[in-house]
Length: 183
Image 1 (spheres, rainbow, N blue to C red):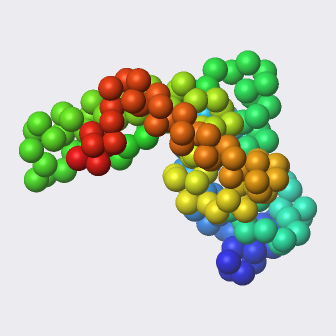
Image 2: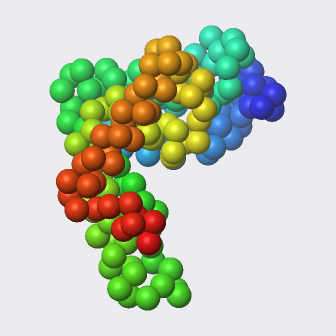
Image 3: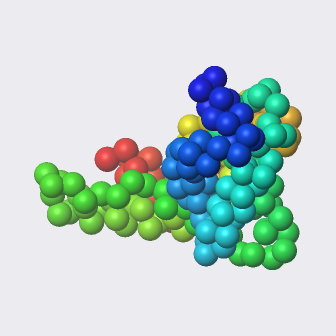
């Protein structure tokens, strides 16, 4: 991770190649994070985050991982948009299924699950969707999520617990049991 800290240092010095390197590494992840919470406003948010990194690299103190700092910026921008009334959208949830050796009925089953999963995620609060996304899609630790969303570690753990519990209940209401997901 020291290499990423060095990249931020180079960006703070105005190194465009370093910025391009960081942009290539993080833009898509930031965009997907914002898209899953905001929808069409995601591109604006991702661009704003990248601009903030370019302008604010000097403010990075190195006390956290670069990814935590970047997603913290993204989380703040997403929250501001949500407060302004932008409607959040669902998560893409399950991976794309088109796989050469998969039987057609299995593909159909997975596509149906994907749609139900997306619908279930849309029914979660933005706070619950956010912690699930950061944990499962960005593979961040609870500590990192805590830093990003700006709340205590135990609050993140509680949100994770209730988000999974609520998601499970919603899926069961929709007729999707554990056996269908694990199939």
